Length: 362
Ligand code: SF4
Image 1 (cartoon, helix red, strand yellow):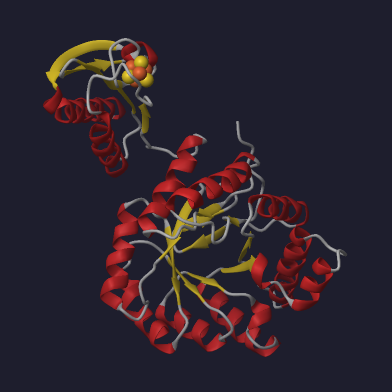
Image 2 (cartoon, helix red, strand yellow):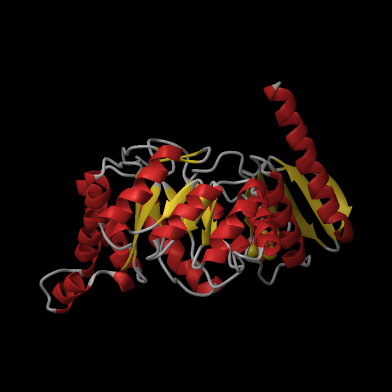
């Protein structure tokens, strides 16, 4: 059982973060933000994939101006990612964004921080302080290089300095991220910070890599921190389509039993006993389950030798036979269909399972 860390709660639009709220999944659009149509299309795509909150880079005036058109069209809350320029933060707030990612120490002095925090507070918009291992302040970096401080400690110190700036202005609607490019530093940093503050955490491993390597690295880092109970919202960073980031994030939560209404797909690795072409079946069923959000366990097994037995815990499944599929429910074979009809038969069973659940729930 995962024991979540007790934190303050903030609200990003209608999504609560921390304070016992369900762990949300974030991603970032990869379009030019000023390209309103492309950005809105990508936001809708990731929302459909299950994304709870989306972040948009706002590096120029024209990006901030585009937010006025983007925000009303977004089905999920938007966070504007701002670096160095407080005016962009002001414009993003005026456009109605539900969150800011901004480090107050980087926007040019207390008066500017005050302008931004005042505008954010008036609108009930939280600010994420995001410290990345590659961008900590020079004096801290020198301490790391001279061996006086560990990198994770320096990241925590950097985050706390930014936090103090906001707290001095009576702004407490804060969440924090501490992302390093390696798993161990990331884990150490969050664990250290958890000892000294109660703000919710946005957790991720930054610039973690491609779809394959990044998924592994992110899963290792976020997985440890999920198990520690330190994640309040997560973002998997991949050099890939943002829908993949959402998919991995959701699956990570599902792996820890932290996702409601999520399906679990069991599929055997296949071996010399296999009797059906499993990969296309698994792909279609996986995509279907991601879209449908049904709390069902589905097993796809390559043969009847171990199929039903190995998947007896599953609600619905298929075990391959010679050119056929044996469809089973809770380990009992209920139908036999031609290989070409396996997907259709499985989806029909899943649908009937969903209808039964709905009837039970009234
Ligand atoms: S279910 Fe059959 S095909 Fe799949 S790994 Fe087990 S023995 Fe091999």
